[in-house]
Length: 549
Length: 90
Image (cartoon, rainbow over all chains, first blue to last red; front, top):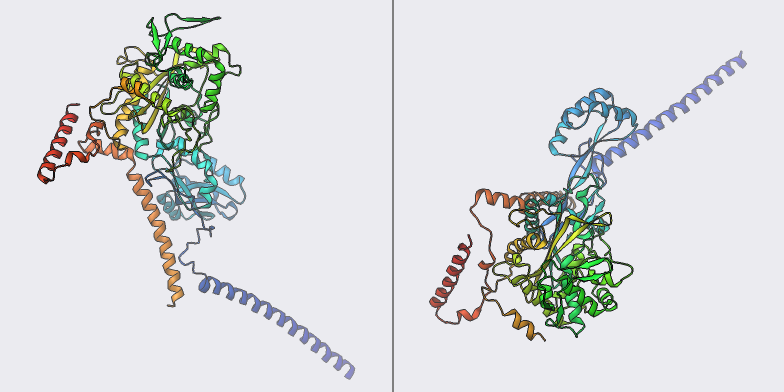
């Protein structure tokens, strides 16, 4: 009995002990769980001061905005604005159909069927819409769709839209630079908040853009490019290429509008190259502006014949060859100088190397591998060598700054170029006067602007079409500078396939099309750049040319 | 409220104001693009393009006279000349 009773007692006792242990375990688990909760609550309520945050907005990492890009006067060109983006987590959603319907009610551009299919396909994450407007954000909040969340993002904004498309380039949807300045300075813009100041002047850029667009409309051209450069520093005040695009829209990265004609095209300079040819001749020290060449008869070499468009049928001086744009005379100069010297000179002034400002969109100059006699003569008047507009204006500005090599830049700077000398000071002075004489007495009278002594030279080149020169399509360009004889700014304008109008008397050559366009630009930007006029006083250029030392 | 809390709050307010300032700057820029200013100026103002002749270099030798009256006279003469020149363009 006792045995049984003891046994019974000990069994109850053991059961009690087990129950006690279990209770203890359960209680400690609960205490631990509540402690965790209390700690977490304290963390959220007391230590974390993130008050007022809506739970719809995920705790986004703190975004360091992409730095601004500004023009030389500190006007914003590109900036970043905070936006929100909407994403869906399909595994948290209850009713796909209802969600899709509500979404389409807010975003008119989302198709319901397509969106439903995308929702069903993705498991955990799906972008519904990037960069919402504040109104759209509020509407989505009002709809209250479960499983939809906002993420704080930034959007790159270009308030000037098309104005600087090719300079700026643009960014993709994830704010990585994909072209232009945005690409070149991608790292710097991402890593620092310091804004980048460009050499561009927004007001000048707008004036040039406006005038170039007017010219393209007037002459029904396919496109065009224009550059304005400060001669002393090589700073690019304006760089326009048309047609252009709106960098606010990230679309069509390979369309024709994206092509930067000002820096990436290879265009034969045509007669504009006669400036370079003349400088080369004067640099030999044996030829002066008054040396005579026989330009009476066309030159025949093999199957080529070189003629003049407005032949004078006389002997011409070097000055007149430039003024009347004589191909025969230019070719004779090149023959006289010799092709070895010609190539050396071209190398020295930087015509054979790629000119690069900061942009990645550049073009290597195209020139013959075998620099033969025929090449030498055609290159003298700008055929058989092709350069980007930026390249040509860089070389010519280098000649006009007193003869120092010019380094074009899109960044604001104050220092003068520290490059090596490309031509002597004497030649540089003579070239400035000769360019002025070409406008006052030569073929480019249309480039004249009342009040400024504009100098320059036009050039027309037939477009290359599958290796053959086209008879109907051409490039017309004008390279100019003002005010002579100590120019401050250079301007280059080129139009792609302009058509003749009544006003040009049926001509579609550069003197009738590009020269007046350049004049319009200079007349408009000159006062903005504070270039003062010489009044009506005009020096005697011939006398000045004779007296250059 | 302890001092650290006040610093914290001030910093936070500063951050918000800076962000607001940034947005306002962008908005101001969007309202003053050269394209927009030109469009509005043509629509509402009777303004003309500045011509090169309207800018003259400052030449101190013109104003050599000590008499203020004479200097003013000369200046107004130059200005009226420039105005006449500019209006003869049209």
